[in-house]
Length: 341
Ligand code: PLP
Ligand code: COI
Image (cartoon, rainbow, N blue to C red):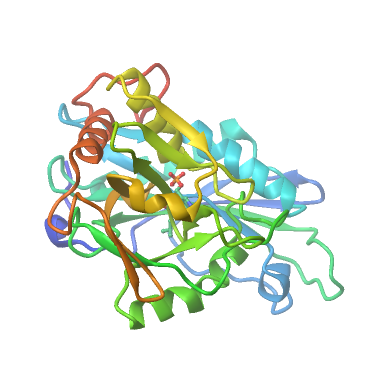
């Protein structure tokens, strides 16, 4: 039961402090056993590598209450693997996959009363993260690290829930060629803060970034991958080395092919061809699938035929199938649903 006194249906995407968090420390070349703690404060050196040189990475996944009352997570093994890839690229020690899954299980179980009720529209967002914690002044990786995971109940990422959003083409880039765009490094988000605030000030929900080298290909937004639907109902998603390999997007491509019988293709998408698509959506753990109604390119608008009132029909089917699998209404492919016991 979700016993906490929270107005679940009116939650936005913001932090609510919960009772327990999981912590494991890395020192002298090894991770300790890890434990659940109640203190939400982190105490580290003023010269910690994370504070000076942004040595941090994180993950995002959710726990869902299913129709039949179970609490489950969605493909946590893929988040564990992606965090190992992020750690490797940032010269951090990897937190082992089995330990990652166990840490998530422990922190969700300890905060089980914060898992929102089935049908409330809210879910429990899980934020695992890792950072260099000891004092480093020359530019080099830390020797000591913390892996942590906390949870917070959340509602829709974009205000208005499933209403179409408007994105703009920014003058800034998200990720350099051969940079860190394909990992979940905190630094990618630090450099997106100014562009996102500028987008909001101009009245847009998000930035749709183009490839920095040529500014001709679609990449992703600050916090989600992008899917397009052609007029022939084919699902198309951009191919690029500097896009985060979204768990949601990979799942949607599978669902399109195996549940809905649609063709699903990952390929280079030129911005010039975007005007010809029938539907567009942003996909991610936080965004789920948020429909895009319009793209604003320096005052020039691309308006998708699906409009500004509701999701287009194909994105709606993908959304219903994905959330149906996550909430236990539709049978999941083998290994996608991980029950918290
Ligand atoms: N792209 C970026 C930049 C993100 O921050 C996220 C969020 O995690 C995603 C894509 C979506 O990834 P996932 O579906 O694994 O949450
Ligand atoms: C997620 O979807 O989990 C993310 O990390 C996106 C973030 C912008 C909230």
